Amino acid sequence: QVQLVESGGGSVQAGGSLRLSCAASRDTGDFFFMGWFRQAPGKEREGVATMLTAAGSTYYHDSVKGRFTISQDNAKKSLYLQMNSLKPEDTAMYYCAAADLHRGWPALTQDTYDYWGQGTQVTVSS
Image (cartoon, rainbow, N blue to C red; front, side, top):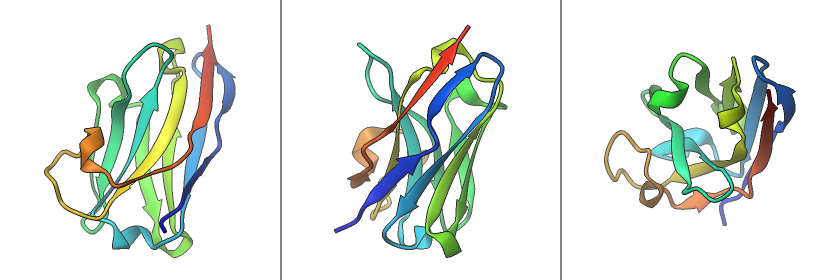
């Protein structure tokens, strides 16, 4: 059973930074993709950033390009999301996800992924 555990969420002011971590029960390289999604109250869950773990290729939602960076540390079985220049509209529950199969690229849709974490809350105040 694959487990993904997110951490690093919190409350920050606009313009601040947070680094989310996702600890996996398998090496990140064992997955085709890993990614970060977010869901704000009353909204659909949306893909924020994704990584093709073998190649290190990345892709971002337009709303976070230039501000967020996805990265991995296979030795630590961890995925990260560095979030800079945070805005109030970034407020959401953030989820880590992983995929065993290659279902298309860029992998920013929920049906691409097989495993999900429980989420970590990010709140950005103005």
